[in-house]
Length: 264
Length: 248
Image 1 (tube, each protein chain N blue to C red):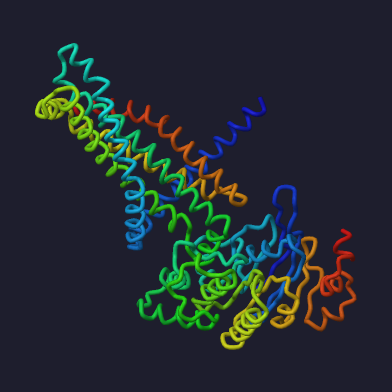
Image 2: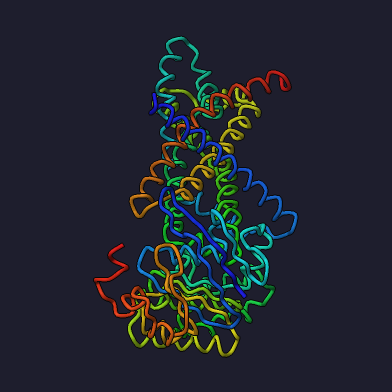
């Protein structure tokens, strides 16, 4: 019982601290935009790093998912004479769920861990203290560019995952299932709506923000030496993925309700 | 003037500072001696506002820095420089970017002027021409000297040195001590030095304080310390394994 109480206490404490970090990030963002001191150079560096680090894994994940989906549903639909829907169904599954979730998981593993390791190492080698003695707020200098870099790049990478997923799916549909390329594309254009794409992209951006906040928080809370950095890195990935999966449900419900209320 | 008044700090059940009282006069070099783990670095971190005390005050020019908000603290930190025990260079930035960090963020100097200042400071610490090396390419002693160049880049009024000569060879230790003395003479810098190196301590100090058991147990000039009847002072100066500091 005490163990459960301890875990619950730690969980609530961590969530509170992450929320404070998130609020501080927003504060420094608007403060810097207002005072014209926003460090766009640092943001672009982070965006390019996050994009380059994740691109190959995102391509492999997207192509493979699109191809496997077509294999899984292609034959079933063909048996029912519904093969003309394959492209549409695959594109809907990719755009609404699979592309944002899988991209986020890949980025959490690749970038979330690297953010936690980098900031964690800075913490234990007194570099965070050094930043403060140079009159520089660590949230401003370290978190703001990573937060917006992750948020923007998750949006971009998810577009990329959708595109390569469709390409992978179309190749399998044409060469293995025997569909024509035109019918595959026509089905996508018929079934996939802009709100399906946008809903997925909004989710992806929120997942990016979650990965950055958790990675930075775990980095800042690193204690000890190399072992502490290793623990923070692992925790950042595990907590990010759990949080993404949990938040995904609520976002999906929210986006569906929004679509029903305003777009249908 | 810096006044540390009745400063207390605990980490969990462990009390590290138990009512530290200290006065540091403008332009003086105060060396704080004490055994490892007694809280000397913690004391320095309170003076520059990196840690908040459980109780007590740190007054700089009459203002209590423990009550400062972020803006006032940043303004104070622009007047201070700190050399860290591990140098704390930013791994992802080269030497020039490290030394220029404060100048780029808090001044409107041109790139050329900043480059000139950085080169001048690197020359002062005996590392000319190392501008574009990365911290990973530097030895421990070189890293420490780059850390010192970064601490003095903004020409601070107060410099805090956390074990400035640890890991340096005797020649470089003397060079750092001379640099310390020249900064004091040229700019009237107030220095607080935490060190174990007795030779270095006696070379640069105006006064020496012995920190032990969470308090300042003795303070005075070099001669006062050498002639002190306090057995703790004598044990520490002589580096004896047996004595009152090891019996407690």
